[in-house]
Length: 364
Image (cartoon, one colour):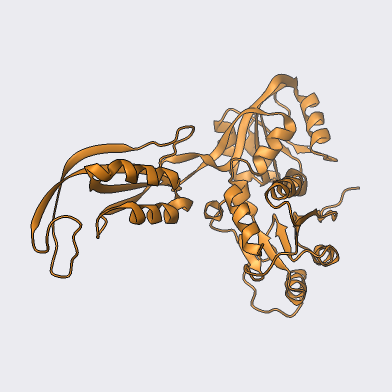
C-alpha cells in the first residue's frame, strides 16, 4: 500500500473538490507514491505531532487543519510552520490536510457535532452552489440502454435519495464525415440521418473524469457529441453547517449545560438567553460568524459555533441564541472519527490517534 491509497479513501469520504476556495487541502508535504508504514491522525500538525509520528513509525500524518495555509516564501525554520515542514521532510513524513472538504461533507464535522448532541432531522445549513453538473449526449437508439447504464455505474444520475435518474428524448441526428473520418455507420463523405436518443444526467462535479471516461469508452461513435453545464442548484448534500431538532424540547440553561458536558467544554460564551426553551439547533464547527444569518433564516433557537467576536453577538437580535464553544472544542472529535474511518478501510496498517492536545487556547 502507498500513501495515495489512503488519500483515495479520504477523498471518498470528503472529495477535495468541495473544499472552500480559500483553503489549502490535500497532500501538503511528501510523495504520494511512497510506501505506507503507518498513519497518524491529528487535528493540527505541530512539531510534537511530527515527533509522535516518528515514534510510531507513521510516515503519513492526516491533519484536519493545514499546516501550510499561506504561501511560504522561505523555509529556514524561522517559525513553527517552517519547522514542522522541515522536520517532516527530513524524516520522509507526508502531511495531508482535509479541513473544509470535511467541513462540507454530509458525514463530516457538523454531522459529528449533531450526533454528539443527539440532533435529529439534520440538513445542510449552507448548501453549496456550482457543485452539480449536467451531461447531455446523443447516441444511436439501439445503444442508448448500454450507454445509460455505464453512465449510472460511473456515478451519474444520482439525485438525493434516488439513483439511475436521467431524461431521454428521441430525435434525428445528422452528420457527414470528411476524408479523414472513420464513421461507425455510413461512409466517408456521405450525409447521414440516424435515429438517436438524447440522454441527460446530472452528477457531482468531482465525478466528471470517471463519467467522461465511461462516456467515451461506451459510446459507439468515433466523435462523441456531448455538452457539460454547471447548474446553479443548491446541493442539499454538500455545504457548511447543519440544522436539526433535539428529540425533545429542553430548557435553555439545561441545554447549554448539556452541550458543555457532551462537547467537553469548560465554558460557553453566549448571547442573551431570550428563549425559555429550545429545540431547533444549528451548528457549524470552527469559525462560524458568517453563518449567523443562515441560522436565523433556518429558525434555529440556538446556533453553536466558535470564534465569535464582540459585535457578532449583537447579530442575535433577540431572534436566536449564539453559543461560542471554542474552535478546538467544536472540532475535537474529528480526529477520532477519521481514525475510526481509516481503521475500517486499511486493516493491515497502523492507524494511530494522536494523543497530543493541540489546543493553543488555555483557560483558568
